[in-house]
Amino acid sequence: MRIATWNVNSLKARLPRVEEWIGYARPDVLCLQETKLSDDAFPHLGFGSLGYESVHHGQGRWNGVAILSRVGVADVATGFGDLADPYEGDARLIAATCGGLRVVSVYVPNGREVGSDFYDRKLVWLERLRDWLAAHSTPTDRLAVLGDFNVAPEDRDVWSPTAFEGATHVTEPERAALAQLRDWGLVDLFRCLYDQDRLFTYWDYRRGDFHQHRGMRIDLAYGTAPVAERASFALVDRNARKGEGPSDHAPLLVDIDDS
Image (cartoon, rainbow, N blue to C red):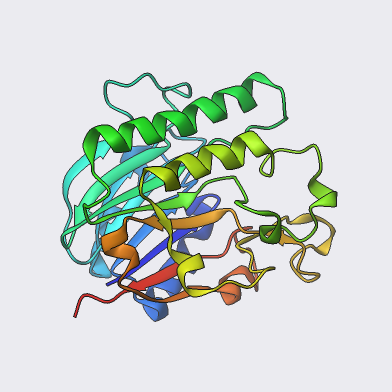
């Protein structure tokens, strides 16, 4: 099974590129973030013509998450349920069971500025994600959590730690919140396969960052041990970040061997 995640930074603007990528990458399950669409504007029919069922949790102008699957969609859930959401109404989480795998697509808040209310609520949101996972799953389940986490797990996941000093995405509290997810039982699937530094998924549009490889690895694919032990291949598709009108993120895909 090939699972993938991609922050498309407006599906309306990027739909032809997403359809093109689906055509050659052929993911079985694709998690999308920052669709920036309302639910009634989501192109279910278009994805259906490509062989994908789709579910979407959207707000309209901002945020928005989706799951596309060609191996079935069942038991759809959105948000944290009964748990208080510090970003209530932002449409940042959707989950579904696809081909026997529980898949969660997340768009973690950016945090904006260290010490701000947005940053503090980001930390609470990540804590709430862990609580929600613990309430609905166990580390022995077949579970994958994919998306834009807006946190670079380690210094090797940014082009220059010095350049990000004092900024969000790299602070110890943010990284500690990710570590709590791993302590619960999630494994960084990409890092199961590749240990090198400077393997990024996001490059700012400004200053020619992509061409100079000044990026960050903030789009992550986590899985429980039953998923991680079958991870056989992973790829950040930099080609999807090139050309006309790309997202500032590249898609990340992971193959799970179910043979």
